[in-house]
Image (tube, rainbow, N blue to C red):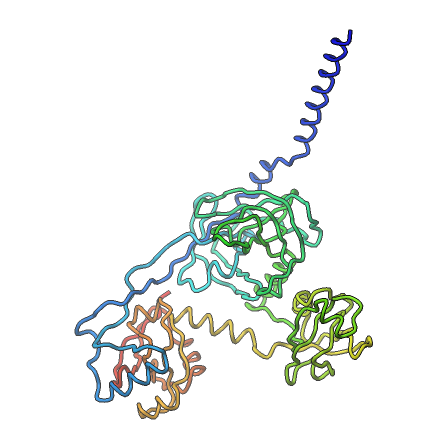
Length: 472
């Protein structure tokens, strides 16, 4: 009898364990339908970029001029190296095409969202769709602060993703990524949200979503989906000590991304409000020294001259506890809050000063380092394939010139194809004398694509004209 009861008990326990296992398995998500529906809107992004190596070009370069030793001494001081060496020049050897990242289609007429670092510096951007069609993409706008880029391909009736609300994400929720790690297209990985609102030291404008979803090189710019099949993030970076995935990855929240997309579509740039302070975290020792009951807030270490903060009376040593009604627990939260606001917005700032709470009202302004100017300079550099600067006064005297620009760096593309090199001084383009770097940029914009125009260059003390053609 006892033996029979023991067998019955064992059987009952086995059945219970089986049902428990089935119940647990039933709780695990099945991603198959989500992947089938979402994959057509995910794209592979690759770029073409000029690869340059130094080659001897006997007889191609100019002969050494009468002031060559003096000029080379100057160039060695200015650049840290000697640019000319008996006719040796830099020339492009080949074009490199490699799978760099992922992206996803946000509108049926061809708008694609990806990371800025995926396409940064590219001469040509290729987009391959799920059905293997390939397109050349145009850059509508980029935002380096959030690491986002908006591309456009000439196509219609494309499959699109549905954007979700990243604010609703909670730690522990299942999420899924689709991308091209190491060039393996449409690879699916899944995991859970580890944390939200994660601030990283180098990216103060993004409250990242932290997950344990496997992300590797090639996943960058790809979508992060929730179980409803909606995009809640853009996979951006990982934490690693080995160069590979270590269980910690970060995604840009969809709310941040779509705010950037709206501005890039409308203006090709992102405008943000400016407060004008340098801040740091408040640790326990600082809190005690300032008389705070607990460590929180953003400690102002410096107030910029003529900034909204200075005009409103904020001072170094003030601790910002709340900004426009948003409590500041860590200093990294403040830049994102300010960045979401617009120039002209009036806000209340709650601070702790001299052991007392105080509220100051201020009016935000646009950043003085106009982002449009910076973005335009970057676009000009990419189009021309070089970085230029005003000719230093000392060099201008030695060359007996007024104005012009000096080539500080050859990135590739147009500049390389036309034989320009670091240290070249450009004094005229398309018949127009060049005053400075801004003037050069303005003149270069007027140069038509795919047509040679004369460019006057001084190389090693000798002036010459070369044909300059900007090719797409």
